[in-house]
Length: 125
Image 1 (tube, helix red, strand yellow):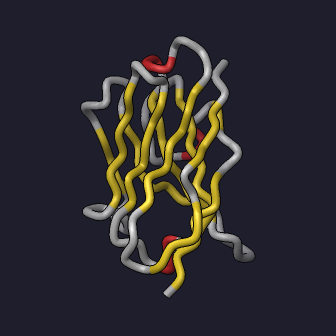
Image 2: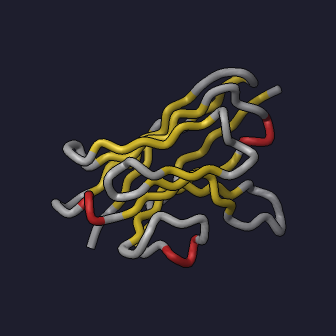
């Protein structure tokens, strides 16, 4: 089992950058594919895929809405995954969650076994 704790969220202006961190407990971090998802605080908004990274870190994938602006990475020695977010837009405002998958790093939230509690990112215009 792994516990995930996100940090790094906050309130920024459009165009700014933030880096989110996801610290994982346990010694088997490199056996998990990692993903970042977000959920806007509005009725009917579902959890949305943002980015994913393979166990080794060599494979990454992104949603079209963040491609070219966000970068996912991981440091297996530090048991931490990151999401570097540049050129932030008001539509990026959401609670951001990291997740760990025993199967594969996927865009589907149903492939993930463990979730963090989330960190709020708010981008003002």
